[in-house]
Image 1 (cartoon, rainbow, N blue to C red):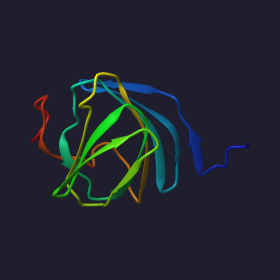
Image 2 (cartoon, rainbow, N blue to C red):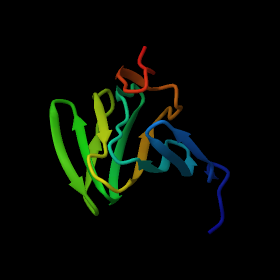
Image 3 (cartoon, rainbow, N blue to C red):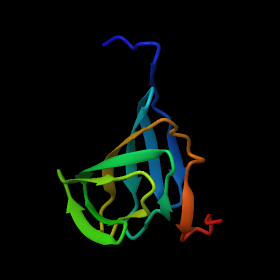
Length: 124
């Protein structure tokens, strides 16, 4: 499939204390990531001013906090995280959690993260 000028294919993996993410594709107004969370780890409790996110679980178990709701998701289940909503992703299981994240918004930079709490002392 040809790549249009507004679309960029990427395959660079970035390591984080909780696991890793790989940007699979990025275009105007969207970004698609593959996220892997190590067993027993979690991302910061955070929110974004400029984007919403859809999470689709591929393998493992996800504990999802979205606003004041908590839920457990497994393979082939998904959830939606609205813009400006506090959220967190955790892996309570014993195998790696793998999910696909689709971001939508006018600005998708990694610096649009407001951290409220973080196990790795990255919160402001």
